[in-house]
Image 1 (tube, rainbow, N blue to C red):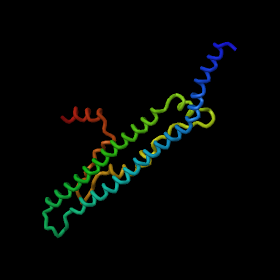
Image 2 (image 1 turned 90 degrees about the vertical axis):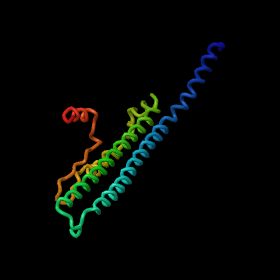
Image 3 (image 1 turned 120 degrees about the horizontal axis):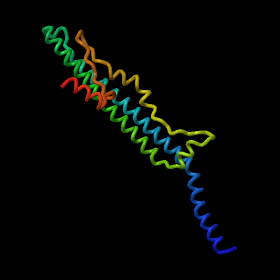
Length: 184
């Protein structure tokens, strides 16, 4: 055998063996990435549950400030206190929604970072014809929607007017610009 042929075969083996070894690790890496995404999704769920408990305690503390009939307040004073408490609760809910929006964005970015580490071989594995494995989505935002809707509800105490919650999760630059053009 010629020296050239031996060099070509040797070089090919030197390239193919590491590539084959790398290819065998791809399924494991995909599972590790999906597990990391699932963990981040679970962290988001825990954050929501903790924030919901905190918000509940905060709103309860504000409601306990409601004037009692024995407080001898005028109707105007009573209504003013109820309105103030409604506004405070609405503000607390708005802050919780704002914090949720930011935490959800961090979770989405974390998922994107995990998937960005995958190369063409990972994408090929995920798209293989025998048992596709698409990247795991974040499930918590959809699961938490009913709870978030509770946070979005207007605060209604006493006979006063409901105080709406300005929802930061729905706010966009375009909506703010439109509002500013309408309301200088």
